[in-house]
Image (cartoon, rainbow, N blue to C red; front, side, top):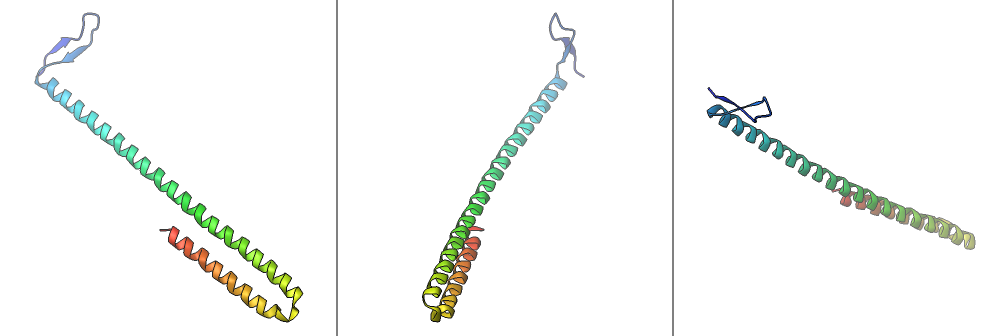
Length: 119
């Protein structure tokens, strides 16, 4: 059993001494180490989440950029198709076919980019 001795002359608190005090201090150190380990684990976990969020955001922006460029290109191809169709009405069906193939190819590029960047 541990003895109790006064902590200081001004204080009425008592501090345990003896074997019980050693066990108690060891338990306190162990608890403190466990709490510190939990805090380190939490910081590492939060850092990993932050990095993952940044990567996902960059992927989303990259896919969006590819899609945006493809849409602008399709709009320009469609505009050119219309202008050339007015200049040469006999070529309208062929121009439409070429414009459709171009649009489908661009859609495939966007799809491939999304698949590659989504990994």
